[in-house]
Amino acid sequence: MITPLSNAKPFIDFGFGTIEKQAAQGETVTVWLSTIYNQSAYSFTLNVQNATVTTISAYEYQLVFNTPGSHEISLTVVPKTKKASLQSNILTLTVV
Image (cartoon, rainbow, N blue to C red; front, side):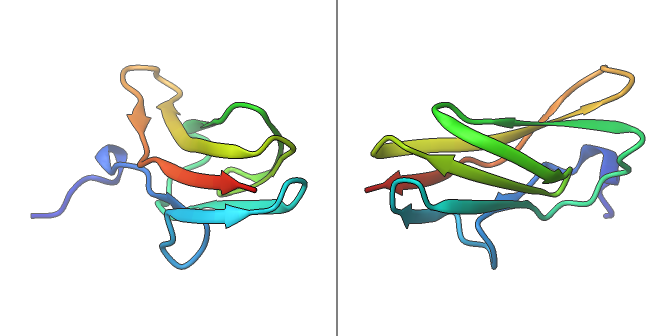
């Protein structure tokens, strides 16, 4: 059975499927959206706290954390019709 792309759960990672990572304070970390969506039909929101976020595209985000600790990152994809949102997996970034 083929799952319609509109119902595909978003998958984000730090690259090559990595979902956990360690970084230094002030280091730039890239988060990628691996699931493909029609950008004109969806909006994308990266869910993260205590980070400076630079949106490169709907599929690439750069984050900088200046506080140590464990941080969770996820992404919400919302159809322009706003009927239902899709929530991604959760990444864990440990900042030292």
